[in-house]
Image 1: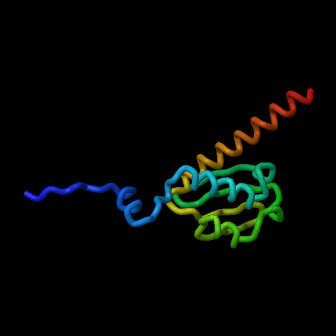
Image 2: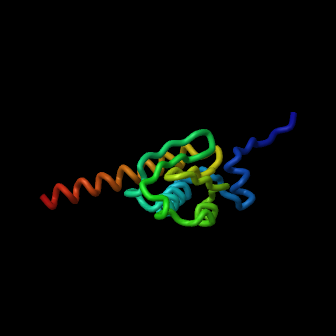
Image 3: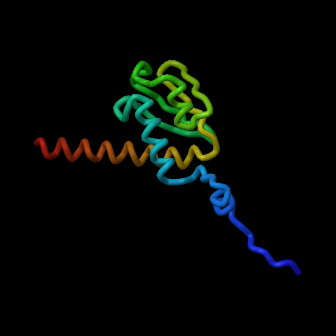
Length: 119
């Protein structure tokens, strides 16, 4: 019987100098970049996702950046219609959506604290 070690996908990629797509820091950076490309927290009316896409309703489409910016942030494509935009991410869209929600919630919490302190 031959003995050997079974390697996980992450271990295999690490041995080849590659990284996995699910790195938390990378996802957070990607989420922050996409949030900025969408025109910031104040420009987002609602956000949803399906299996591979972020679906975002915006207040003002003109505040969004060019499609190439989204592609540089890892998007496979962008579809725009009226004040709605779909950013094609891939199968890790749910993790990215969680990071976006976290960034949006922390931004709104900071705004509430600033308003409370001002009063």
